[in-house]
Image (cartoon, rainbow over all chains, first blue to last red; front, top):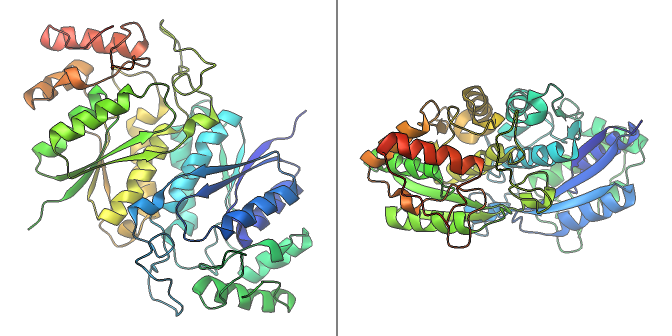
Length: 224
Length: 224
């Protein structure tokens, strides 16, 4: 019997890298999916490549999709700065409908691969307030996916798996450390430099730094 | 007061071209969105460009997205032939999760544009049996979209509009003719040649030909 196939959405960040380790710990045949979507820095993608390579996934696909041409986010639009202080509500680092787009493309690939699972490292605890990270959103996506696909119609739909959704960042780190994730390879910073070194100041860096100190009393992040 | 903005998914086929005319008849500010997704023939996209140009839309964006690299459909995979007879169940011309991917990307653009509507020419009557053309699918997508987006959270979500979903193909044609759609510009054939001329034999051609004869007693389609 062959192992079930799983697609892991891999950004190169802390959460998705932990997800990859979880999928592998279940002996799934793992396919990693990343996107070159117009993000300002490419070091995140370079990190994704290294992580997928180290993990020995069956295939790592990087899809080009210019969400940046729509603008509207500090992560893709040169005219919007990445904020370094906290904000109320949904921050400018929100990329419109990003998770929906990424999950949809993963769903397309899952149908062709006949994959049973799509792993997404979304997290609704220590996060930036994005609407598409919440459990109710994931449930709605699952319902839509079951109706959208041939697999869904035939009764063996693709399951969206979000193992981190209710964990704190420090719990995620503890889980990843137990699975031997090398977090020094991961890039979470919204404005990392070309070598993947973090700014230490943006929203994402602040959340990450605090979590490492709490979880394992040391921060493996490479700062510039 | 400015007119509400609407994005129209424009493939260059009969249904989406009719949708475009409907959106314009409501005096919306129309943005057309097409995809170069690895379809075997480019004449469909050329048709979309001509139609958007003739209609005078505010902006026509063509997004590159290589769904063809996943394979699995006769419309994108060179190793799968387009069938010319009828088939039971979901045919090989089904492109996995295509409407979900296209609607998701339209949703991303709608958020940035602050568009109120996304028009999609899906149709569940005279169609090829694709799961992502059914009303229950569109409803599920809407629910997901309302939870996915900043617009949804703030209460003024983007509305997915499918004016053709319950119309027969001949009714769609009659509606389009009343709105002055030039159907000779549209390409529906699954294997049109470089000049957009139809094969007359594939599933899509057969449905279209019958509908024109019924609706207006003549077929403006250009055959090779």
